[in-house]
Image (cartoon, rainbow, N blue to C red):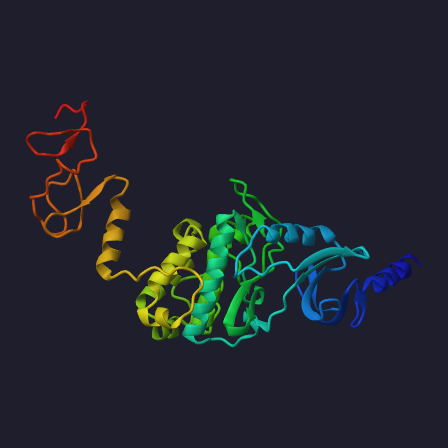
Length: 355
């Protein structure tokens, strides 16, 4: 008798096509996620269609409203042109509901591989959205093709922050692991970071460029690597290699850093054709890349660099010869970062130095 009553309770809570929730009339179920079901619904007051997110029924025949309300609070703090905004949120007849705009489809509905121009445009927008979220200390934790919503003119909006985290200056452990297939190794162990979102974006980009989704144990080069090289350049291959490193510390620190590296990896021809909604940095030539690598490598040893008087490449004050051209004509008496100048070598010194 108790089981029958419980079954009737669940049946009563089930939603059906053409049923009403306040001003919304349910039209069709679009899909089901980890904790919610999404319906296409008609806003009978505004006369428009929306995507309506409603918590799923749990084992006790109840709907857990708290997770959805947490997502509403999280997304309401993030206002960015590539983050799917909350159009309306309410509790109607005991249901927590969240309404958003409804896109034409998601990236998951598109074929693999995709044209280079199109996927580059979409990933640029996704990284822009993630960079904004990371700046506000929010980790998405579930970046997948199904959560990238496409609107007219291939405008991409990142949605479904349901298991997202607000980082409070320390690493947290979570029970939700994200969507299988797009989860970074450390996130699978319950330790997501900004780098975990970067890993997921790298997987999506690799999949839509090569037609193959890499799988654990993520040993480079992955299947589809030959097609990747044919369709892109060496810089993009290196970019993806870094994004998909197993060790989090070897990946991009956050989406802002990843976005900068992504634009640097693109050819000028692709950049010229794209309409990207974030500022684009000029593509560096190989000499600039070499300079940056040199400075990054020796920054801890040499805290200050100046251009060589002969070749213009970076040289540290403590170097006798330029490592680029070999000249010994560099003087630092007018550009030293130290307090005093040696009368013999014309380099900076500190008062406590004996020589």
